[in-house]
Amino acid sequence: MKHTISVTVEDRPGALTRITTMFARRGFNIDSLAVGPTERPGVSCITLRVDCAQHTLEQIEKQIHKLVNTLRVTELVPGEAVERELMLIKVSATPDRRAELIATATAFSGRVVDLGADTVVFELTGTPEELDAFHELCRPQGIVELVRTGRIGISRASAKRTTRRLAAIN
Image (cartoon, rainbow, N blue to C red; front, side):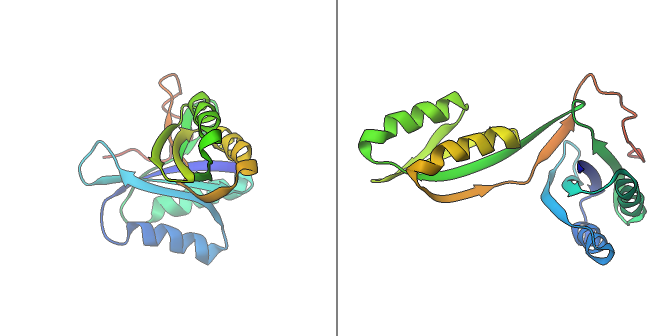
């Protein structure tokens, strides 16, 4: 089963390396990884997507919590969290097909970020399923290039604060 883990860490050299090394040593695969600053100076959030059984997830969470610089480990439970990805996709687009492609992107809340002589680059933010759907709709036109960020997430306002939280920030 797929799980999303949010790890809050001190923004120090080696914090990410310690986490990814722990995964590699134990033979766990990371499906998606995103890292960025938080609202607190000197604190970063690492969002990981893993495919494992519940008991393995609990083992992973305990191992991450033991690592230096880890402040909090939380599972982002579906329905109790908002998760998004960003996708940039360059699509072949003859002038007569551009309007149709742009309308499709607009329906997905996407926007044009670059127009070339025979390509259009779109930026889309949404759930992985929404991005997959747009990707499939563009496939017949010809995808020139595609990049996606890792999944990021945050607990919903209505989510219980105790949801899979192992440690609190001091």
